[in-house]
Image (cartoon, rainbow, N blue to C red; front, top):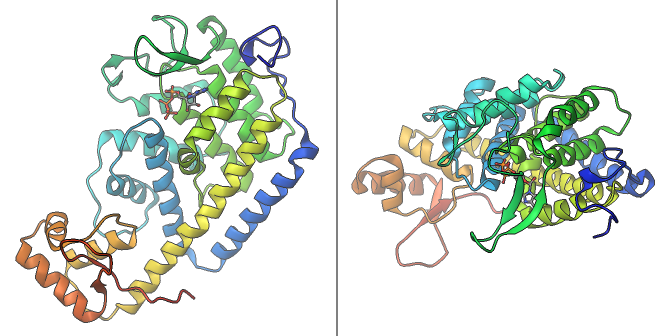
Length: 376
Ligand SMILES: Nc1ncnc2c1ncn2[C@@H]1O[C@H](COP(=O)(O)OP(=O)(O)OP(=O)(O)O)[C@@H](O)[C@H]1O
C-alpha cells in the first residue's frame, strides 16, 4: 500500500482533489499536440470526401474496439454501415445493422457529434440504456438507465476463476454515488482550468473509479473521454481512436489503473500514460489515413474498368484490411456465389491487374490486392 491509511483512492481524505505535476507532463503534452497537428495538417489537404472516409474508419475502429475490451465481437461491416448511415457517408451497399451495434454507435456518435452539449445524468442513463437494450448483461439482469444498486454486494473488479478470484478494485458504496456523480458532472461541464487532454485523462480515471453502473462503466468512461477529446480538438469529427489504442494496450491499461486506484491523489503517472497512449492513437491514425488514401488511389486506377457488384464488394473488403487468405472458396462464401463464379470473378481481376496471386505459401492458391510497391 503506497497510500497510508486507506486502500482505494476514493477513501483518501483529500478525494477527489487530483494533483499532478504539470511541468513533468509538459513534454508529453507538447508531443501529443504536435502529432495532432501533423495529422490534421495532412487531413486538411485531402478534401472533404476522403476526410469523411477517414473519420468513418476511425469511428468504426472506436466502436468495434471499445466492445472488444468487454470481450464482445461486433460485426465490422454492420458497425461501418450503421455509422455511415448516420453520418450520411456513401459506402455503396449498406450491411444490415443489429440492435446491439446501433446502441454502441448511438452512444459514441452522441458523445462526439454533440460534444459541446453538457453531460447530465439523464444523458449518461440514455447511453447506458442504449448499451443494454435488453436490460441484461449476458444472463444477468442489471439496473439499466440508472446507477447500480449493489444488491449483490459491493461493486468489485475481479479476475480469475470462481473460488480463486482476485479483487483488483472495489468501488465506493452505492450511497455515495448520487452525490459523487453530481460533483463529477459539475466539474466535467464547467471550465475547470486543466489543459483539455489532461481533463480527458482525469475524467476517465474519475468515472471508472466511481464505477456508477452495474456494467458498461469502461465503455461509458471511454465515451466521455472521446467527448472531451472532441471538445479539445474543437471538432466533432473524429480521426483517431483512443478506445482502439487502449484495447491494443489493455494489459498496461489495467495495470496502471489498478496502481493508480490504490495510490495517492497525485496521478501524474496515470496522466503520463494517458498522454502516451493518446499519442500512439494519433500516430496510428496516420496508418488509417494511409489506408484510406490507398483505397482512393486504387479506385482511381480502376475507374474505367468494368466490374460486377461482387468484385467491387470483395475488393473493398481487401482494401479495408481483410485478414486471412483469400481463396476461391472464401470468395464464394463471402460473395454468396458458386465456386465457378468466384473463379471467373477472380480470373477477370487477375487479367485487369487488380489482384495477384499471393506469394505466401499454403496448400491452396490465395490472392491479394495488386498494389504498386512504391507508396508515394
Ligand atoms: N485490474 C483492474 N484494476 C482496476 N480497474 C479495472 C481493472 N480491470 C478493469 N478495470 C476497470 O473496469 C472497467 C470495466 O468495468 P465494466 O465491466 O463495468 O465496464 P465495461 O464497459 O462493461 O467493460 P470493459 O471496459 O471491459 O469493456 C474497465 O474498463 C476498467 O476501467
